[in-house]
Length: 325
Image (tube, rainbow, N blue to C red):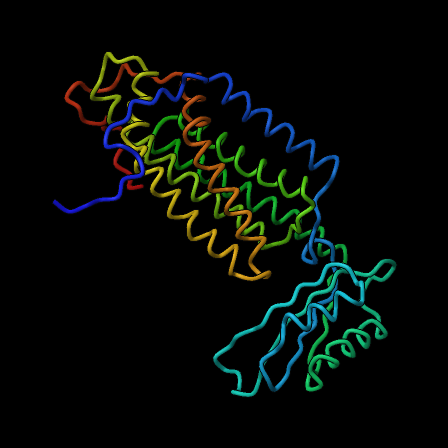
């Protein structure tokens, strides 16, 4: 018989509600503390949200991004982001780098003197560097980006709420969205506590976390819906434990493989994506926890109407019952 790796036994009987008040209370406390951290410490906004200057630099040889970064850090100009730009239409000797520098105190846009300092610093690393464009983002545009980011996350959560409500029942939708809010708020709170840079890439990570977390939750809820029709007399709490244990292997395997990939990226992926990967690491851990200990707890508290469930073991044939996940 072929050997198989199992992270959990074939059959488990874990009582996920044994410390229900403690786990759910810890989640509520984490959300409250995260909101307080954001209010007290604030977020360390990157150039996208604080405003600043974007410079397009070109050179004839592969850019030394580490050397560029060290040269600009020495200028003490605050937050600096450097990315190499790739395009199949570039010439073989055309190497483009995008440099973003936060707005300097008292300046709406970068002054010519500031641009000259940056260019001189980079030319000390690579004399062939030339600036082909310089664009500045003012505080007004940056504030609009902040609101757009908030609306993007809110719209994502609202869309998920509507989908889960149509596919299952309103209790499931509330539990799912509560778990998503828990994941996003606590992740943002971690960034506030440690003063990590918060920019548009982190917003992208938050949206990715929403998708990851809801996927795992929907799998468990889908099995729960089947069990609601199969076990008509089983108490809801016992049924939720049974359902979670039945899908636990899948939950652990999904989280483990995702974390393994993210850890590799975090260690060897470089500074450019490290913030994104860190947000994803926190989100995957929190998403797995909230799936097991937040979403189901809320559904149990709200209760589920089981009066219209058929007794033949098949899910109810309501209008949205057969919507594909």
